[in-house]
Image (cartoon, rainbow, N blue to C red; front, top):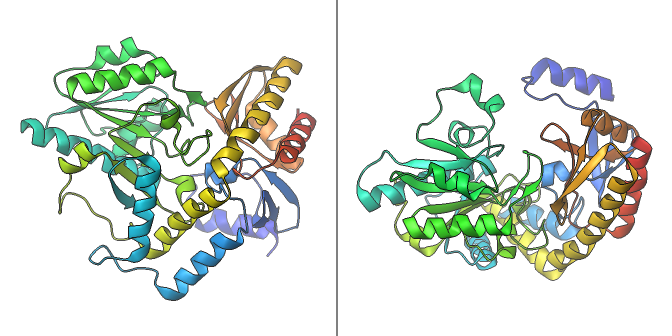
Length: 395
């Protein structure tokens, strides 16, 4: 089918909840994607920070093919080897204690919220606890995740949401302290705010929130769905701060394209929260998804992906800073490693994205005025140079 026929068919039969770009992607190789008409695109979006290893990684693909031929699904009524091995690798990489596998990042958030409320319920025997979330955050679109997403644009059509949620300002410790009550059971935040505009947490802020949580027996939930899995130059962004969460959520690059997420609990929370019957999922932890997770960690270790991100991420920052100096409509750069944003002033950021597509470059937006770059973690300095050239042409 031709591109226009595929787009027409999609619009006829798929619920219109996305304003898609007029591109029909067909296949990928390395850090490049190709549409059905053969046009090549340098990919600095990675399926929204998902395809960390790039396209066509033979080790990854073969592991999935082998697992498909062996066993895809069993349900959580039985054990399976890929789940056990994937859980061990995630625990060892994070230094936390126990894993619950989900099908998405949003589901990971849902489980983390339930674990926090169950922890508080077991602690004091009542269920009217509150959670503090951040303004301009994004945690997902299900009712629970939406309730802690600090953007009324997403929330208003779906009220009433779950109760007991208070909002504070990201990177403002006094704002957080002002929302704490005797009912507060958890504080949830992204270590690097993604959809809200690429805002890394200030070290003093994150350490202050952690100290507050320890003082008052409040659980700290860190959302690493977009910024985790090596993207900032550490396996998880919080590890750079020396601040360990009680619960961490992750997804996206965890499976590098296979839908899988997880929430990971430290020992204290794991031993005093969810028990059999409290939470479940039919597909979560299935052998195919966990074969992907296991293989991702193996490739990360073998190919030194995190160290590579530190090197190439520093170069990307340098080149982007050069653009900010050169162009008046670029206000500043924000980000860490390979999650970067350029703040665009005085012109529509969506216009730049459209022009970039025409020039064979895939970039995306964040917030209302940020050009976001979350490429595969295997990009090279030469790829960065090519991206800069295509981006300047788009300017």
